[in-house]
Length: 235
Image (cartoon, rainbow, N blue to C red):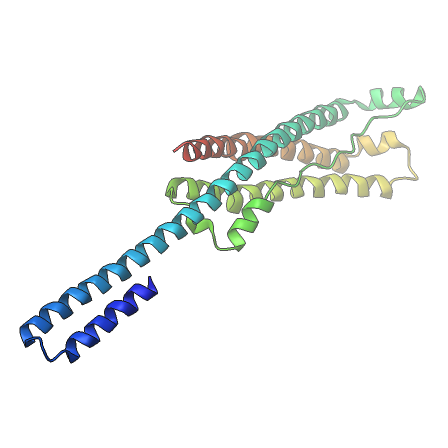
């Protein structure tokens, strides 16, 4: 393309220098050559832009395929984590329901209260998203609604989920601390202690809240994103 532009530029120069042509003929030829140059430049820019856009959309397609797989894994992990929360809550509620008489009977029979030790929360699959975002390519996604949902999921819902899981684990560790502080005392006294029971009550409340966050926020948006991504890939 550069050679063509150079060739027509030389023609313009020769036309200007040609003494055999009238001024009108020179102007006409110069205008024609300029139009050819403008068309060539415009075509070159257009082809380059088309090629670049095509390459960008190919990158978007690869990214969306990988992201869809990440979201499917996220949904499975969310379901597993919800089930784990539910099991922990049931176990803690059984502990809270124990009366002093029942606790005394348990320890007299040489049994122990089963206190579930399960820290909750999992690492969401954010590698593909973070890599695409950090490379400045999020703007390549032309579907604005899809892009906004994606940003909401990874910038708001995923951090919020991590935060509620962290709060839960903080309360769980408070229970562990209380157990360590009372290691030299009979366990039945610990499980009868109002402060310890109140900590477990908050643990159950947080567990239920976190299940709600998973059910109402993170999982529904992940499901929506998968559907939107499939539509985008099938265009």
